[in-house]
Amino acid sequence: MYCPSLFREDRLEVQHALIREHPLGLLISSGSSGLLANLLPFILKTEEGPRGGLQAHMARANPQWRELDGQAVLVVFRGPDAYVSPSLYATKKETGKVVPTWNYAMVQARGIVRIRDQGEWLHHQLNALTTAQEQDRAQPWAVADAPADYVEAQKKAIVGIEIAIASIEGKWKVSQNQPEANRRSVVAGLSMDDSTRGMAGMVRAYGKLD
Image 1 (cartoon, rainbow, N blue to C red):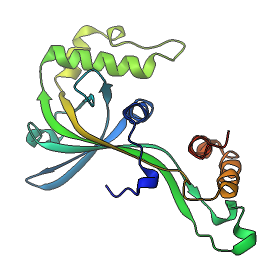
Image 2 (image 1 turned 90 degrees about the vertical axis):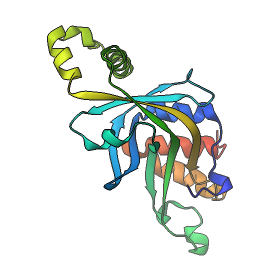
Image 3 (image 1 turned 180 degrees about the horizontal axis):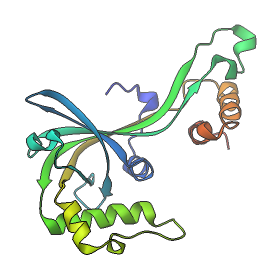
């Protein structure tokens, strides 16, 4: 992807953290019918190889998986994002030389897919995915809470996807190209809205404003 050096985030642990916090990834592949893309919740396996691995499942009725085994794919994970209005910049009154932009953080992971259709693999994947999403709830749900025959029927309707990450890139476009006064005013402005406070925190952290 296009990524100016100022916005590069090469630390693997930071990239992995974004994937864990925002596990809904866009799986992009190329097949006989052209480009295909589907959103899937992924589990990150940090112990799989030097860059980690990704596991997910999709509906068996989804045609994308039928040409995936052994193919190279791209998975895109999006973190916090926010529109940045020129009115947030402290320098607007001084020079007027400001334009709107969009801040965001993202990770792109590439690798080779292996289709996993074994019942045991799918069972482990479903348990891992459920645990990751339910563990912080007051009364977490577990796969074992559902009738076993019902779970088995549901498993027959899905296929597993496993990706060994061959390369991974991070892009954190969080106002690093702005002077400190503008970074501070962006943090103040974005902090006022619940939907953009995550990005405000990133601008604060990467702008070293604490």
